[in-house]
Length: 298
Image (cartoon, rainbow, N blue to C red; front, side, top):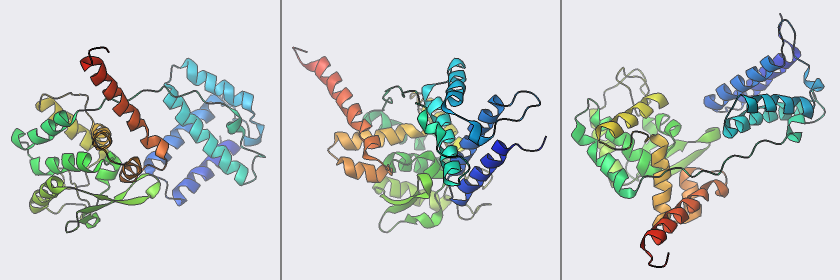
């Protein structure tokens, strides 16, 4: 069967995202979510409805099916975000009269706080890296120092190029979500780790990439996750530790030591201060634990 009108418009929407330089991860996620949306409304040998035919009740029906599949509310919210973005594009293009998906309420995300390593736990894990005698210990130590020392997302870490490092002033040029760039300082320990790694780094298949895998290509997000998990296990730390654990620790430890919330927002690259404010809740939670465990009248 030839592509339906809905599939054609989704193709145009994905093309628009690529022209706007939206991150490949977002494009991949939206493409998968919208493909599932089309499949739900495409019985065997039947084309899905045209975009103009969709109303709020039809979208609620699809959302109800996601609920019955047992999907996590955050997953359902992401799928609805993809659908809202599609209909917003179609409304702007005049294909539909308005963004129908905005009329449908999304499930509330559960208010959960991520587990955060203490400063002692974080430093113990990083300090253990050189002594574990792994084949690429210098590279791996630099990875850990930048994850914790700069609060980078794993996608930002693997996206670093050699030209993004200002060793004299100790700044990194970081490309965050939505291709937004920011400058992030790094400390003396990260600088020492980078200097050692760069002195040992051999030219690879990707001459620009800062971090290379064993084949000389750019290290991937999956590769970094595997490295972090391996060292956490070898060092006798929590095996559930992942790259984002260091970003949580970075923000929480800065806040606990009196850093300004706005400064932390800039360092993390958060578009909204409300996203950064969740670390205030983390600090309050730890404060209550201390109070409950130590105050005689708690």
